[in-house]
Length: 174
Image 1 (cartoon, rainbow, N blue to C red):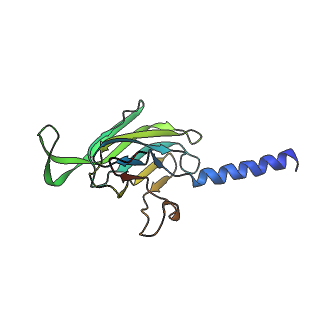
Image 2: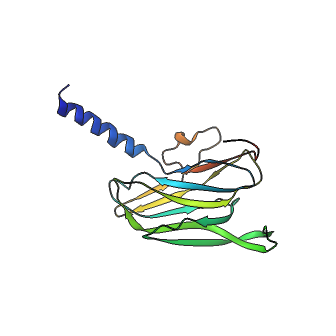
Image 3: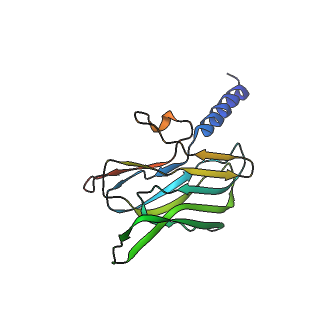
């Protein structure tokens, strides 16, 4: 194979691979009832354009959310009222929690990647998977990483899967 033909094959493969890259949560498993930190990895922009905003919907089961500060990005937290108040670890009454986090700014060029951190309290019940739908806004276009697999489907069985965190027993090592 001639060098230019080989280069064309490699470039085609790289372009196809990057088009399949999804926003993921890393790490994506944490111990039940613990405080947990994960990072949403944004591997590329939208159809070649830079990312300007990343919005994540927080699952209803999650409380105590803190978003990572990122220089050059404004962070906005939208809250929602809880169905019933909770008692916090220091005895305070909690009546609302973070419903959505938005980072807006950048821009994050298509050729680069970045991570957007979240810290929160995981529910006490192990064995469940929580999904964090993400909308990625770009200079031209939007990627909606919002699909949640149906029962029996895997994460890779949907074209635009939402990042997820699986809750493991508190005594399990990971």
